[in-house]
Image (cartoon, rainbow, N blue to C red):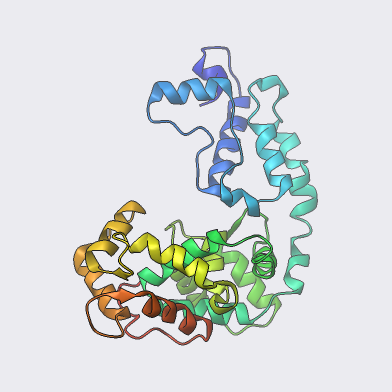
Length: 292
């Protein structure tokens, strides 16, 4: 709903441009430009027309795409882009036309790491998603470039058709069924696409980038009681704090999968083994438990 509709002014087809801006913002980030808990709060924010690109997902969104969103979400409908001007915007005329050039530097090993990610547990995937968010842009630069190669339309999300085009361009032996399985396995957010964090979690070399200090930070998030071990109860609480509803029965299976010493808990040393094994593409024992 555009501002002119909220405040009761005359409105025309320019409200559709506003809706397009809201939709594009949501597609590339997974967030709403005007988050609110009540209808009144939502209408107030829409009427003011103020939003930002502070979500981390926007780090992978091109400036052209963000500029298009800005020019669609203009409070004054007379100053918004028209439908014709949208199609003439740089995001369409320049960035998308150059998308074919992105397929020149794809590392085939990326797909091998993505395929090996299938054998990781939900606990490991959660930890990896946290770890990549603790890393700097410089540390992730190489994989960021690989993400851009696959993100042909520059939306900050990798779609199935983009992967299929890249594997055709590079003569990579991967069937459509395997591509669909990759998307399903890596789609941590459950939206049918691979976002930046999901891609990094699946493809980054854990041993190279994640030292003890980073691993300790993530371990402490699950070591709720601070006793240098993770129990099933602590893991259950940690998942809840991360807004992930994992049943206790499945949490117990995760503990069992990563409990090398078979004493009912995961120590920090056992936690580190998970990422040492990931870096060598060796599946964690019993890691077929609770696939995401």
